Image 1: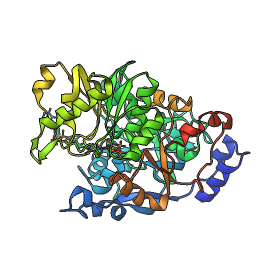
Image 2: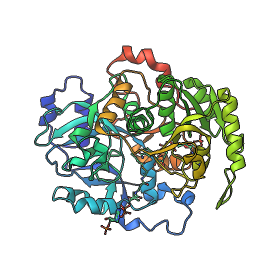
Image 3: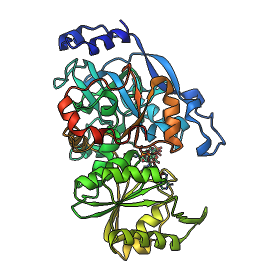
Image 4: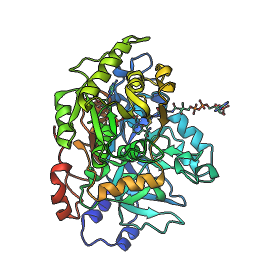
Length: 447
Ligand SMILES: C/C=C/C(=O)SCCNC(=O)CCNC(=O)[C@H](O)C(C)(C)COP(=O)(O)OP(=O)(O)OC[C@H]1O[C@@H](n2cnc3c(N)ncnc32)[C@H](O)[C@@H]1OP(=O)(O)O
Ligand SMILES: NC(=O)C1=CN([C@@H]2O[C@H](COP(=O)(O)OP(=O)(O)OC[C@H]3O[C@@H](n4cnc5c(N)ncnc54)[C@H](OP(=O)(O)O)[C@@H]3O)[C@@H](O)[C@H]2O)C=CC1
């Protein structure tokens, strides 16, 4: 039995759940990996010069054993997330440390501690097998998977599954990720595939859409409300393209920051009106490596006031980190919120705390989304309220180039990867719903 036979079953309209259950599984499959014996390959290079094309491999790997509560999924498509960029440049830490630590927690978790790491934290595909104790999903089900892996054996995570002490991001802090022909997930990661989308479109939103939902919309994040002025960094990027949609759909007022006229145009086409091209306007928040320039924070704040009719920011959607954080804290209004989920430009932030405490501002740390938030975020995609922001699609063989594009900020929105899917555009089940939203679905394509 090979992956080709699985693909044939997926492409046949007559395949039943029983047919999928009866398909023998292959002993091995193709997967995107990084190698443990290469973690020092970029030693001494600047972050920018570490090239994912050199560290990312396409390997034939053995199929992992299926455990209780788990599912093996045939992956039709996946997408590149920035966490795969971090893995591929071994920053800020090698992800093999995460796999070793996980491996020490249980007999079953030992499977993850391997000399190779199969990466990828999104997928759209078809369930092949489920482990003992899985009743909600069956072979043949068309699914997407969110990337929250939790054990839930501690009460700490029982209200908010992100607070589980054994919380991990699948395909980053666990093995057997989505950039592969087959993936291993916990069955609670599975959600119905939005039926009006192709495989690659369905695989694009997962991680970033769920993250933006918690960070901006959820009460665990900024609890955005109608009329809020929301400053969105990287508004046409992975996270930002969903934050912008949430702001618009929720009646808020996004102030979109981007770095080119092309990206500004994408934001405009989503419906945003207040747009700042940080490149064209030349903001330099740091005078040198150690000194910020509050005059530049003020110039930025003044520009925001011009765009809002004199109002300041209620919520900052932060992720660039060190480069922008001082400005983000400054431009937030009295009582406003800075919500942060990342530090792409450096994690040692500096800001003037007087502006935080004197104006009663709050900084909220946010990370991915809990089970429920991920489900709610996927539901919005399935209902056509929020749309995928897929720009370009690569083959599995070219995943290194796809990750390079994201690392060097050469991309727009999300970059997709075809895993088993032989071509783009397959997997659409509800053509009428798709037709209703086709312009929005294609907004980021090939721009
Ligand atoms: C969904 C997508 C998301 C993204 O894309 S996010 C972006 C990508 N992700 C990242 O860049 C994050 C990568 N992760 C990390 O950098 C690290 O993962 C962390 C910095 C988050 C954590 O580092 P660590 O080494 O895992 O943990 P420690 O807390 O620094 O060290 C553990 C040791 O420190 C002890 N410790 C922890 N808290 C305390 C405390 N409050 N007082 C005293 N000790 C403490 C522990 O016990 C343990 O000790 P012992 O090493 O001996 O076992
Ligand atoms: N904690 C979590 O759960 C999650 C964290 N992340 C993290 O968030 C970060 C962003 O991810 P994602 O949105 O997918 O990445 P993308 O690269 O797709 O988008 C980020 C955008 O941010 C902008 N940007 C980058 N650097 C700077 C800078 N120095 N100053 C201002 N703007 C900047 C760029 O837009 P432009 O050039 O147009 O301004 C870029 O397109 C990554 O570090 C990622 O690891 C992502 C998802 C979940």
